[in-house]
Image (cartoon, rainbow, N blue to C red; front, side, top):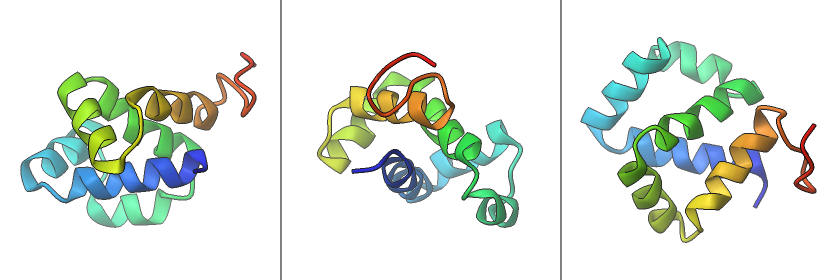
Length: 91
């Protein structure tokens, strides 16, 4: 699964719960409309995963829902924000 697909699935999970979705929108400063228009930006996708990283129970629950390891989410964020490449090397 590609990093952007991981982030999009994580976003769908976040948005499936109203209180969590409201917290995400408040913390990122996005509205639903602005998020839709900015979703292709890797930095916004990285922010989705960063949001989960800031509350470990959500990170773990999201990973379980997606059937992946929580570290897969973290690795995807590193690739999306440019701190590591797809081979895992620090950029």
